[in-house]
Every structure is written in structure tokens, then in C-alpha cells.
Image: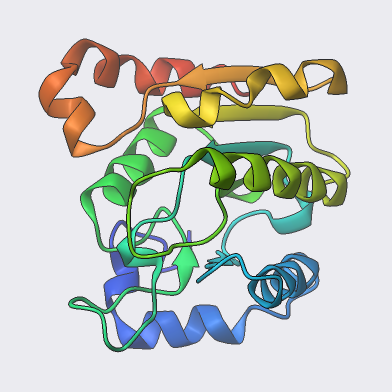
Length: 201
């Protein structure tokens, strides 16, 4: 385990710089280019894939719903985010994700995290048009992941995509979202998350 592979470490500017310096490593460079393409195509502030994850070598894709404010690196935002979609971001959902991944024994070098809706646009609300456009992006992404075996749809909005992926030969799982809202209001669902994620292998 590298020293910066800990929950919430992307709060550190030096760690963020180190991750940025890794964005052209062979396993993640094609995904870095894809993120830059999505930004040009008008998908908003699309965060980079975390280069500590598996990149194009991923066998497991954890597909969340939409990036949150702590994926944003906008200097005008109230809190400085990382610019990455990562289990190491400085927020409670990312921290829970980090620990649930460990409890489920998901190897970091086998998995990546992404969102059905690829870009942050200043609101957690999800529109039908965002879901439609995001579904096309998921198809583009999975085409780049040549050894992908399992997709875990994290959250109700993400799970709406499951029927579109059933005929593609992947092992599909649906999971509650590891957000504070789920923990506070649906604790039984929250407690199931690591056992569901452990089935991804």
C-alpha cells in the first residue's frame, strides 16, 4: 500500500499534485484522454480517474450516480476538491467507500470508480437528460475496459441503467449508496453494502 492510499488523503494539495503527475501512466492515460474529451463535449466538470485505481485494466467497475462537489477543483468553490473521482476524496461518502472497499476485500488494482453522469454541474439533482447522455458515456467507457467482468451500480439512479447492460455478458450487482443520507435513514441497507460489494469478485 502506498503511503497516500488512505481515506481523505486528497484533502492534501501535495497528494493531489502527485496524483496529477500520474495521469499519463499507461494504465490510466487513455482514461485521462477520455475525460478531457468529455469536457470538450460539454459534460461539465468531469473529474479524472484516480491513477491509484486499475485504470483500463479494471475487472470491476463501481458505477455511482453523479460526481459531488469534492470532485471539483474549481478554486472559486467553498471547499477545494480534488479534481478526481476517488475513494480518497475529502468527504464522508468517499470515506465510507474507502472503508467498504477494504471490508469487501476489493483489490484497488482490479477496480475503478465512475459515475453514470460523468460531470459535476453544481447540483446533486439528476435530470432525465443527464441520465440519457450519461448512459451513452458508460457504453463508451466499458468499451475501453477490455478485461471488465463486473459492474456494481451504486445507488438507485445508477441502478436504472442495469437493464441496458444485461446483454453485455457482465456480472451485474446493485448496491445502496454509501451516503450519509442512506446511513441516517436506511441503516439496514447501509450495513449490507460491504457484503454486496464482496460479490463483485
